[in-house]
Image 1 (tube, rainbow, N blue to C red):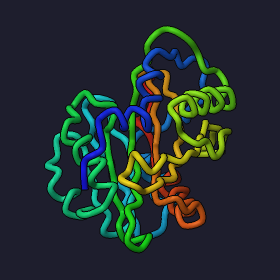
Image 2: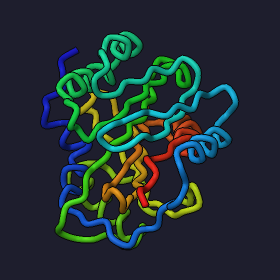
Image 3: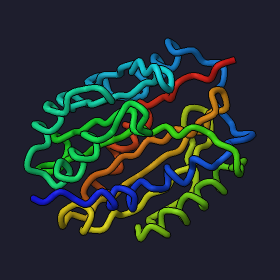
Length: 237
């Protein structure tokens, strides 16, 4: 299967590049919680069979991700062999392996988890991205942020399924769902849900993407569990 051109990754996740010029001001956070506390909180929000792990990321701060049994995790600096082997022969692997192979330690991508057991003959994956804050604008309201993000994604040719807010970890966060056209993933349409969590100290926008085959009924429950078991790095101060 031919590898997707590099420009295709910009169609799917270029919104994160655009957000590099955003000031994240006045945003609600789960402030004051320490790492042990948020790890314990995430653990209670996922099934007992799942693992909940702290990823010790020196660049963006330690964060928490959860995964079902037999899922495969990759973080910058890891060898790609295990992830590529677990997803071998799929359109997902053909797209993502070259992207992750070229992703250095300064990439916005901080973790990728692939689940090949939940949906037969398909990859369900989730990805943690972190975009540092730079001057240039502001998103004070999660609803406004969701609309702006959806407009940016639509401008890249993606089909927006929904945009709005959701309650998560005692706060309201922005969420956008969209479809990625089949020319990106080697003939396979992908359905993506993405959530955005601003942080003020250090100033950054965290996002969690959950993507799977174009079957929302099959994808949504697992993606919601993924979100429940995710926590960005605690705020300083």
